Image (cartoon, rainbow, N blue to C red; front, side, top):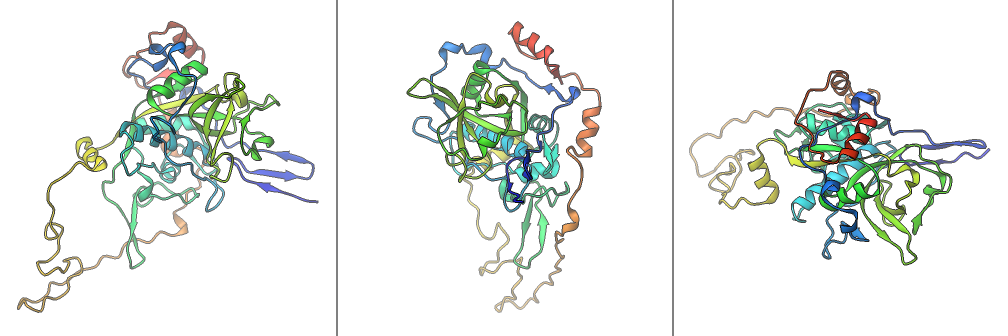
Length: 390
């Protein structure tokens, strides 16, 4: 009997004639349906008729304001679609706010898996936004590369660097990114307005067997499956020559899947349930914002010499402490502290949500700023959905 394994957000396993797609998108509990909104939402200010027929953040004034599609399945399988959908959407929004300034800030899905509300077994995109609002933030990928493995949340697994001697050590005070606001959005008009005004959004969706082999064109599911198993990010929308509306969606299955890692899906009919529950966040730099912003934007122009950085007048570095032949003074003694080495023992085996998030989720939400929604119909719908303000 032939058995076939295909990887997606949830591992596809064949058991004889029965084939099943496990679920790695964890649904929200009622107390987790929170928002923090302090200004009018875009759909309150933008009429449907004012939105363009096509819009794509990859093609704004002949410029690409999105970050690259990535692959959650290497170097090994990991059900971290929830972390990729949010970090990619927020990385895009940072790029949009920076007007495409190089280099891109690409947020770390690995640090999100290590410390955020989920593991390689699954998680929830909306909970990432809530976590990034309550906690200290997420680092970028340069100091916590993707390993496709759930690790413990400590300084080493937040931001690290490794030396030529093979030892690794935590990086002190790395730049982190949070969200100042976050919330839900659903429905064609509201989603379009949010994407156009502030950038890509994270959405949950169903996964069908037909989606595995999708290569190009506008995908339109005919099974009616809307059960959420996966999370993606929507970067725009369009309309075909024959009048078929579609969303432009970034997946996290590598560029060899779909259209270079993206796909189009029929729009306005809630295909695969992709218009049912989406989330967004407004990114901000955590910590000392002025200093961090100057560093990220490359705006510092003060002169820094090698001596300022600890090098000797003859070009030798104090960190190495090479004896100076022209000096009568004895060379200083250098005490080397061994850097901690990461082993397989630092893996964590928590379930879908780590203890920190569980503790916060079970507590009574605190009152926050009054929501700025002026749309009474939207407010009624929000209450019907059980969304709470924090």
